[in-house]
Image (cartoon, rainbow, N blue to C red):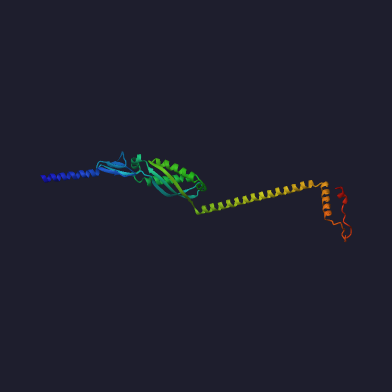
Length: 267
């Protein structure tokens, strides 16, 4: 009898230990626990740390609520029917207060079923509103619209969009060549326009300079009077007298040079 009691006590102890082990669960940091009772989702959400549950009747599924990153390459068509490939990086998280609803309505594979399709659909809907060139020049505006649309889609499924980054838009080789040719033509046109403006400015400067010289010549002509001419003649004669040594040249070659001494005496 004593041995039987010891065996029964040992069995009871083992059962107690097993029940204790299976009645406890730990929710990891950055997760929330979805409590399932015989497969049914309960409204209780378990936070981080240790919790008790009914052994063999209740179990806990953990759902990550930290920020997660989804990066993918998406292909879409622009407004002018150019095929564009975009590398999109999305940061999102699960609403901690709705992990039970997410698990019940979508399941643990919410990334494949919701996030990836929502990214592709949002990007295609927005890029269809812009031409290929606008997608390049208005990337911040495009990103903002994609973010707004994607946020609304994820919110419906108990997820929160943290941020989105469209890293680059890639186009076909033909389109890239067309853009390069267009840029070259625009640069040549700009250079030609600048050269034309420079030529116009130089021509205007020459016209202005010629006008100034003509005006200066006209003013000089207005300053030439009979009195000024006579004064200049007297100055020339005076300089000639200052240099004359009083002797006439031995060879005159015809007529003797005439010097008007009357003008000197009058002076």
